[in-house]
Each structure stands twice: as C-alpha cells, then as structure tokens.
Length: 88
Image 1 (cartoon, rainbow, N blue to C red):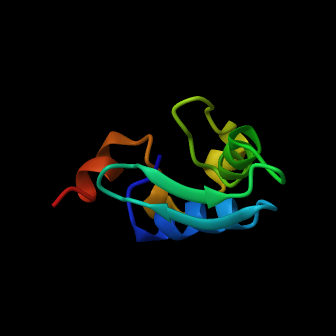
Image 2 (cartoon, rainbow, N blue to C red):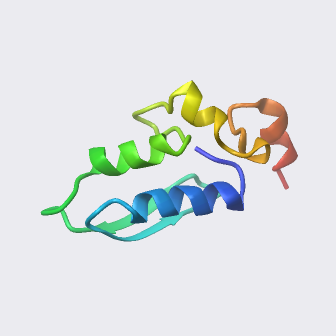
C-alpha cells in the first residue's frame, strides 16, 4: 500500500532488488503492482517480503511497525489524514 510517488519509487525499487525481478511498475491510483520476473529465480512470496521490509503493506502481508515507521511522514499510508492529503 502507498499514497504517493515516493511510495511508488520505494515499492518498485524493493521489488526490482529481488533477484529474478525484471520489471516492477506500481500504480498509485489502483495500488496494483505489475511484475515481470523469472519464476526459476524468485516467487511472489519473496517479492512480497522485499516490499514489506521497506514498510509497505500488501494484500497478504502487513509490514512490521518498525518497517512502517521508517517511511517518510508523507508516506504514512495507514493514516487517514495522510490518505486524504493525497486525494485529488
């Protein structure tokens, strides 16, 4: 989960840094992550763990409080006020 372009960059970098991931594009509006990866080298669980490790929740796994608290204040996507600040 995320709310802004900084979140997008962090999520995509975390996914790309997972060995075997060739492409990662996260959509800020839909919260959908499109991946191209080599299933012989990685899997969705490993990619998910990379993303939650940098502080972003997925549908399946919630980031630890420590990881979530490490994101920039602008990126505190669990905070309703922050979510509202990022709405068009």
